[in-house]
Length: 194
Image: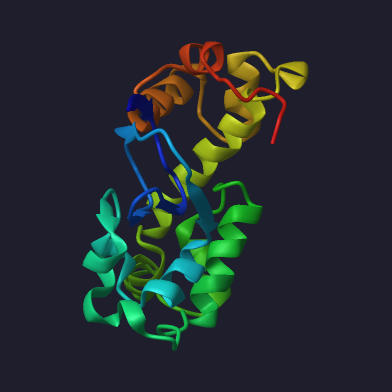
């Protein structure tokens, strides 16, 4: 068994000897990796909402067995409830913006109040829109950091991805991964690959 320090920022179902759900994350976690065969399925939050059929805030920042989420519904063949089209649209809009759109603007674009968007988004995505934007902005910065041939300075990376400055970028990386951007880049095993 190998211990790996890392983060999971998207819904992932992993299968080694049992099926587990890694909920959307807002902080880093140490994950135990068992040698052997694994299947990873990367789900969008709205896909996880439909598949699991539970409010996603229940599995945010968690690693739990699918049976623990679904209980007796593990054998069900019908999908769970579909997320509201406005929530799916808001999620995609946040992703397209790199997490840089304001929640008030997002709410206005879907025709809901901020409070209603927050409630529905948290239930169906797992995070509040502002927190989801934070994770999306981080993921964008991480993708840019992973490509050394296109590497920006940390100040340039912060500016490109919507952080106020290099210190803000570094604080967010440390909060979400437990490492600074340079520490993470130095230890990244998958540079330039998919």
